[in-house]
Amino acid sequence: MRILIITSLILFLHGCSLFQTIETKEDQVTLHPNLPRPISGLQIDWNVIEYDSQIYIATTYQEYLDYLQYQQDVLRYIQQINKTVCYYRQELDENFCQDFQKEDSKE
Image (cartoon, rainbow, N blue to C red; front, side, top):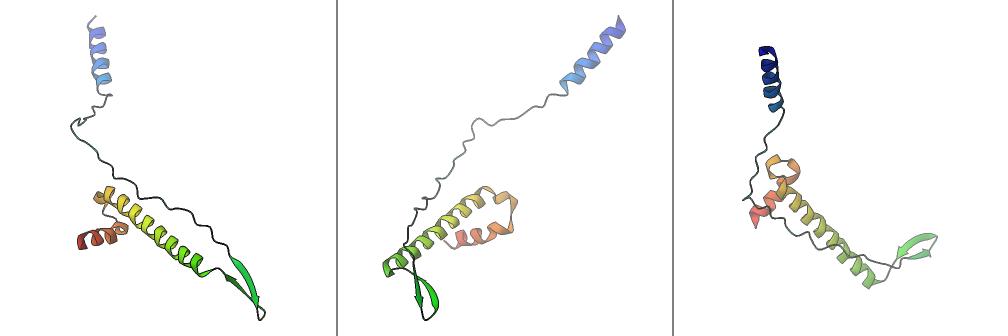
């Protein structure tokens, strides 16, 4: 009888050690920033021109200005996404994010 009690007690204590306790913080609130404004698409009519046995690709001046604005929009989007990612990865202290931390300290 003693062996049965001791065996069941050992199994019971060993079984309890398999469970992990997880501490939760119910009063902690996680705020997530808004994502940057998405990039709108751009449609350009490219023209192929042959001049003096050379081939050129051309577009109108206004479409070229629209293209430059589109490139600036892409750059803005990438920088804002990178800032958001680096904000949440601050504790990793990555070289990638040091440039963005320097920009934030200037502002």
